[in-house]
Length: 228
Image 1 (cartoon, rainbow, N blue to C red):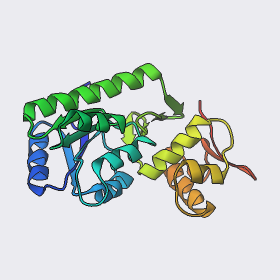
Image 2 (cartoon, rainbow, N blue to C red):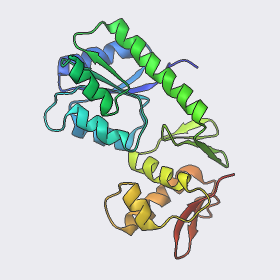
Image 3 (cartoon, rainbow, N blue to C red):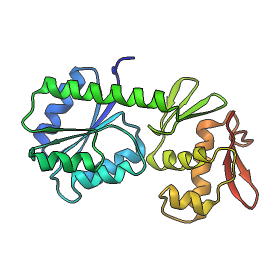
């Protein structure tokens, strides 16, 4: 499996560098999106699934280290930190926060390309070895990468949908209370918000969302994901 078409998010407040990386990575076969800060990155992560993130450290507002640490609580997407802060302590801090790699600026573009491919290859190997995928009907959910496929085609999940689906997948076959889904899925809002989110997920995984086979409502207890 090669990396052609892999989706990368570049998070950096330097507009010139963002544009350079977008062009360079696109020329090498990647689908590239960009964000100027952590807040914009989080918004895009709510709407799209990415195969790898390239994150700067020093940005207005939330730092790249804080963003990395926050994402690592719920996602195993490879994160490569690209920063002018290249001392040993800086690199160690980045790796301790959950980054997969750390490349100081200035950098050689070919080295960046090799590190991206290495990180993505390592992620695929880890996922295959750990066996953390759950199948239900035509769907397969990778709990490490928080990725859903249906009939072999990737299904786009928002970050919130992926987190809640993981909570259900970890407890596959068991009812999970709405409060648990809200807390462990880091979802803001009431139990009604969970009901709306489950409705959205059913549209993505069920042959007939009005008569669900896999995402079942358990009266008085919550919801359950029924695997094969």
